[in-house]
Length: 118
Image 1 (spheres, rainbow, N blue to C red):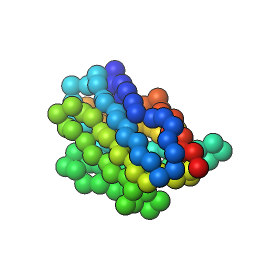
Image 2 (cartoon, one colour; image 1 turned 45 degrees about the vertical axis):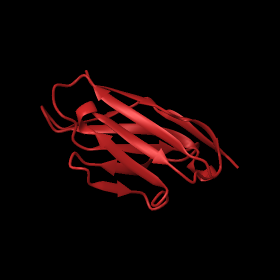
Image 3 (cartoon, one colour; image 1 turned 90 degrees about the vertical axis):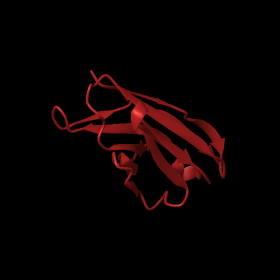
Image 4 (spheres, helix red, strand yellow; image 1 turned 60 degrees about the vertical axis):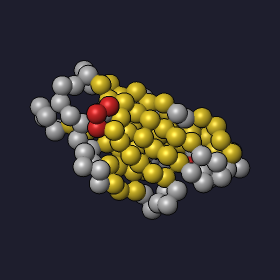
């Protein structure tokens, strides 16, 4: 059974930095795309950034130039480096992993809280 374990959330002042990580385990097959999403109170979950197995990245406009997504395929781990944080970045951040074998399935982490104080 695939599990995603996230770490790295917390409280930071505006302008500060935080780093998140997420490790996928429990499958014989390699993870395809991985990503980070977030959900603020009263809002829908939204994409933050994604990265494919060949390191192609995609970012939400709101985080471009401030956040960097990366991954270590050998460790099935995805990272999110968040710089120049703003109060509007406050949300629960969820890790996402897509497998294409043995079938296409998407898994989610439990979420980690990121709070940016102004």
